[in-house]
Each structure stands twice: as C-alpha cells, then as structure tokens.
Image 1 (cartoon, rainbow, N blue to C red):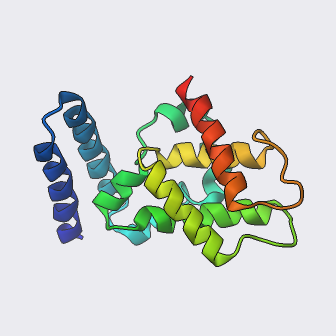
Image 2 (cartoon, one colour):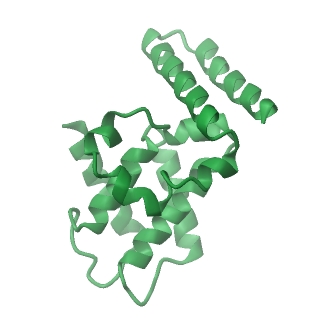
Image 3 (tube, one colour):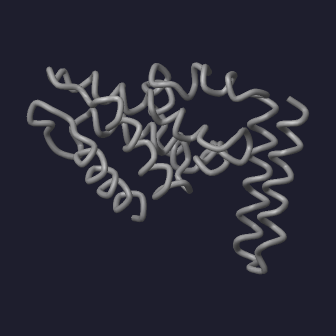
Length: 171
C-alpha cells in the first residue's frame, strides 16, 4: 500500500516535471490532491473497486446531487490509473457498462468483448472525466435522456450517447 502511494505520487510528480504549462501544472496539482484524498479513503485498488459509493449500486445516491457529480472532488479515470495501476479505470468501467446492458432488459446483452472494448474506448477518449460524471452519464442514459434503446444497447449507442453527454457537460 505504501509502495502504491509512492508510485502514484511519483507518476503525478513526473507529469508535473514534463510540462512547462502552468495550466497543466495546476491540473496536476489538483490531481495529486485528489490522489492523496483517494488513497486516504481507499488505500488499495480493491477498496476503491468494491466501494459502495462508486459502484453501480451507489449510482442513485451519488447522482441525487448532479452538481457534486460535475464539480465535486471525485477522481478522474486518469487519476485512477496513476494512483493505483494501469487499466484500473477500465476495470471500474466494466461493471458500469454491464449495469447499463442489464438495465436495458434486452435479450441480447453486450458481450464481454464489447464491454471490454467500450471500456477501453471510454478510458482512451475521456480519461479526464470524473468517475462521478460517468456515473451521472449512466444514470441519465438509463433514464432515457439520450434516446431509446430500441430493444438493445450496443457499444456504439453508448459512445454516441456519451458524445451527447459531453456537449451537455460543456454548457
């Protein structure tokens, strides 16, 4: 656990050294602060992944306060990967995506391969999103705010809806 803490801090400090942009340095300092807070509450990756707050079961509670999802002190996908280890963000995304698939009630659920690929795409393209924002996205998606499922959910449906969510986020 102490070694993980040191590795996370070293990764974030290296990000600070590589950048000469003050804006990126400010964001990195915020990331370091979020990482420290994350480790104080969830010292191991297992603690985080099994938490009641950030799993699909905690979605309803967390999403009651959309402002907290948008502006609260929650880790980004990138912070998860730098704080714990590479691919933790994808591991966290998988249950969120399975939850969407299960919620759809469709006979044909997302396959393991589709879920894994979708998690990879989200992690690669949206690593700056907070986990709380992604939980809000899932909540809104399941609420029908990004269209109808038409009997099934596909990775493409999720990615297109996420693009709509990003437009909403930028307002």
